[in-house]
Amino acid sequence: MGTGDAERTVARLRPFASTIFAEMTELAVAHNAVNLGQGFPDTDGPAQMLEVARQAIADGLNQYPPGSGMPVLREAISRDRARRYGREYDPDSQVLVTVGATEAISAALLGLVEAGDEVVLIEPYYDSYAAAVAMAGAQRRTARLVRDGDGFALDHDSLRAAITPRTRMLVLNSPHNPTGAVLSATDIETVAALAIEHDLVVLSDEVYEHLVFDGHQHHSVSMLPGMFERTIVVSSAAKTFSVTGWKTGWALGPADLIAAVRTAKQFMTFVAGGPFQPAVAYALDNEQQWIADSRKQLQANRDLLTAALRGHGLDVHRSDGTYFLCADIVAASADGLEFCRWLPQHIGVAAVPVSVFTDNPGPWKSLVRFAFCKQEHVLTEAVRRLARL
Image (tube, rainbow, N blue to C red; front, side, top):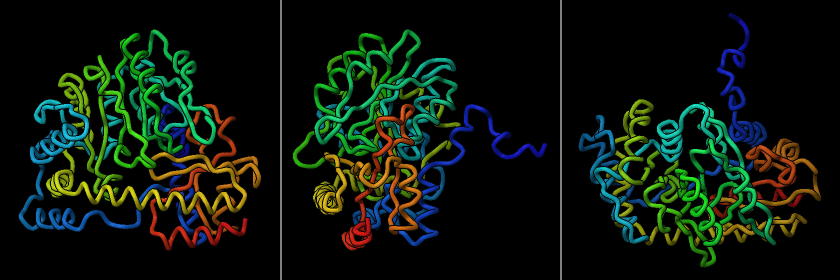
C-alpha cells in the first residue's frame, strides 16, 4: 500500500484527478479574487420557480421520483422542444431526466460506446467529455475549431480526418463552451452528413441553447434529415434558469438510444432530485420571458467585459452565446496557463486557460476564457482590477 493517491487511481482516470476549475477557484479564494473562471451565475433564477420547489418540499415530494424523471417534467421538456423546434418527443420513451447535463453525457457514452471504440471530440472541448470517454474505456480522437475572423468555426477537414472505421460517436457542442461560438448551419450540416456517411451516433450538448446573442440562431443537428434517429440531445435547467446547483438535466432522442442512456444512468445516480423537477417543469412552461430578459442581461455583460478587455489591450474574440468570451493574452504572456495562475494574486481576477480543454494546445496557448455570468457590480470590479494589466 502507501503508493500515493495518484498511483491508486486506475490509469485511464489519472489524467483527470483534478480540474482546472478547482485549481482556479482555490486561487481566487486564497487571493480574494473576482472569480471569472468558473461558469456559474451569482443570481437566482425565477422567483416563482423557486417557490414551486419550496412548495414541493413542503408537500412531501422528498422521496425517490420515477427513474426516468417525474412525468410533469418529462412532459414539459417535450412541450418546450415542440414549441421551439417543432419536434415531438414522446415523454414516456424519448425523454430522460438526469442529474445535470454532465450525467446525461457520461451515461450516453457508457451506454452506447464499447471499450476500444473511438469517440470524436471537437477541441477545445468541455473537460468532462474526455473523462467520460475514458470511463467508458473508449479512445478519443479530436477535430478542431479554428479562428475565423474574430470568431471561431469548425474545421471540416479535421473532422473528416478524425473519423475512422472504429469511430462510434461524435460529441457536438453548440453554443460552444469554452469559445462562445455558435456553429453555423453549414458546420452543423457537415456534422450531419459525416454522421450519416459513417453511421455515427451524435451526442449534441445544447445546454446553452437559449443563450444566443445578437440575433444569431442555434441550429440543432437533431432537426436535419436522417439525424433524429441517431442523435441524443442533452440540455439542462442549470444555465437556462441560473440554478447550477439543482443539477437537473435531460437527454432526448429515439427510444432505443434513450433506453441505452437510461440503462447506464440508473446505476450511476438512480434518480435525479425530486423537488426540483416540478419547479423546472413550471419554468419551462411559464418563464420564457425570464429567459429572454436573462439573455439580454448576459449580452450586456458580455459587451461590458469585451470593451474593458479590449481597452486594456487584449484581443477579444467574438462571443455569440453561452456565459463566456475568449481573450488572446499574448500581449501580456505567451502562456495562458501561466497567466491564469499569476492573475488572481497580482491582479485579483480569476480566469481559465483554453489550452487545458485540448489535446493539441499549441494554437490555443495564449487564449484565456472569462465568464461574464455575474452581476454588473462584480464585473465592474473585475474590470477595475484588470486595468492593472
